[in-house]
Image (cartoon, rainbow, N blue to C red; front, top):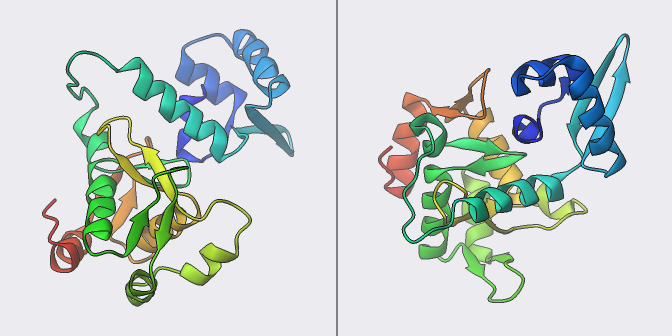
Length: 206
């Protein structure tokens, strides 16, 4: 049920029971425990009660657990291709494309990785470049949360950008229709416009 909420969308207890293939009463017991341990929040609206992850820290823990569970002598991705390519990770972009973008931002010296803490620093050149492609850097900096940090991608085993900057990047990608959300999963599907943009700007052929 927690992994079903990783796309950042709220769901009812009935929906989570169906997704988890358990009875509504069983789901209710589990949800009560999850609320007790502050892993999810519940918001009432009319006759419905909507369940959401308690925050980005819970999403990071779930991603980290998936990485740990998949460790072995040799990593072989078994993630479905439509999720491995591009998807949401709570409120930012994950998957192969997100990792390639992070690598490209580093190559262009738009971001600098700190050795301690996993944070990224946005350079002056990077700030101007991101604003030029429609990313709201100023609003991202004003948020009371970590600005940019490395989130290890569970399907790629390499970092993508999380934090306020990661969310701003996803928001811009959706607003400018580089990607469209899958209604039934966390998958992000690149549009023809998005493919052209990523190729022209960053040399990414997806």
